[in-house]
Length: 147
Image (tube, rainbow, N blue to C red):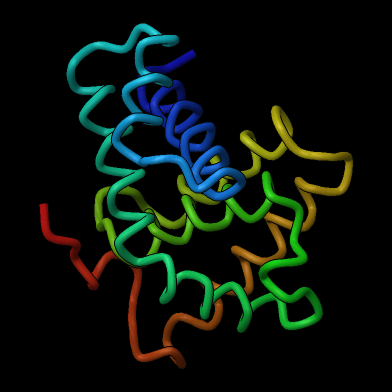
């Protein structure tokens, strides 16, 4: 598995645990990284994904509500919610990953960790987000996060 995908797995696992348990983010990320060997650039990428996703969580959740209005954010399966948050952070705020790659990676995470319907749900919601970006007055990667 490629370094960035492994880093996304770590970030997803950390985001899921933080969402479900409200544990301290830094402790959770450190524990997840101790479980997975990643080179320094992979560790930095995983940490940046978690930090950025958490910093923009309320904005991200508003976007989820907009692209999946039939599902209140709190009622979306925890894994799917964490995958969407991670991917939306990458698409809208990080500027490091193209929307196409972020969607593909999110779908792969949904295949690995989600239910049978997760892949379609994640792909549909993220496709809707990308289609709506112009009308949201934001574009992929233009809302840069502070490092």
